[in-house]
Amino acid sequence: MTIAIGCDHAGIELKREIVSLLQELRIECLDYGTDTPQSVDYPDFGEKVSKDVSSGKVERGILICGTGIGMSIVANKFPGVRASLCNELFTAKMSRLHNDANILVLGGRIVGRDLAKEIVRIWVSTPFEGERHAKRLQKITFIERRIRDNGV
Ligand code: RB5
Image: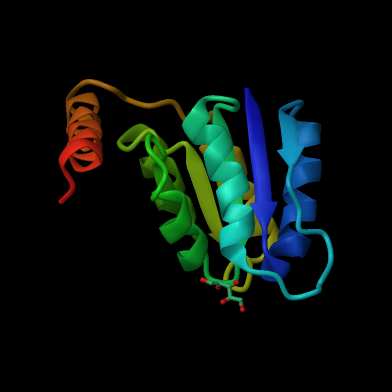
């Protein structure tokens, strides 16, 4: 599995921690920055990661901004992206089991380092349950295609 990762200035410390965790877990990581505390716009970095997930270049993505809200909004514009804002362990687990989330979003100003690392550990190792949940995801795909072809 390859994971693309990106953040804005509010997520640089957490991103650094997560990149080393992924290395420790021997998970290939594509790091799109940002890497400096200079203020940047989260859509620019959200787009890079979401594009890779949407196109199938990578299997998963991780995005970090201050709250995680802005990155979630951006990521979920991309076809096939199921981005979940998980600032605690339960939603991290459920986002994989029930939603087959392919982008994990974290709030760099909300979660501490150790909690964030635990969230990532759970998120990368929890499988999708499938069955009734797969049918629901299929419905999301149909909605996406309908909007693409006919508008809202
Ligand atoms: C940047 O100050 C902040 O707005 C951004 O990191 C994020 O929280 C947006 O949702």
